[in-house]
Image (cartoon, rainbow, N blue to C red; front, side):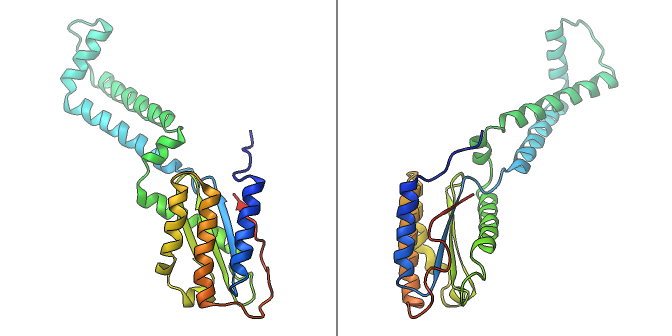
Length: 227
């Protein structure tokens, strides 16, 4: 089943209006992109499954008499002598079951995200934002003055990436206020309000560094792009 749109038509119109107002004061174009998630984190789920299986095998190896005796009692075996083949077979079974069970559990995306280190999520969001920037804004304006505001909903993270002309005048740290303005809303799941706050904050920075002159208006669409 194909998921519905992230933003409502009303929200799209509000964001487009905010972008238009910000661009009216600066020689720059703002593109907003909203993504449900920046990655599936399937490799993270695989890694956790391997770790859990490894821990199970380590426990079996460290306390082999206890676990072998436990299996004997569960199966109703008496005075059973475990051969090397049976022991290795049990280890393979335990490791496989633990691995498969963890893989199934981590099909739940919320848990998968919870178990993904923050540094990995930040890197994946940044990488997806750079891809979106290259496709939607980079080099697509007269004078290389595009700015991307990217929101990844699952990770509750945002990125602001500027084209060459803007990046030469505005250091990444300057976007801090815009990031804070957005994230405060995103934490309360008010995505449209967050994007509008981000657009307004970015617009103020752009108006200060590249104020409007006779540059052709509206080189890029004002409405948000959903991924």
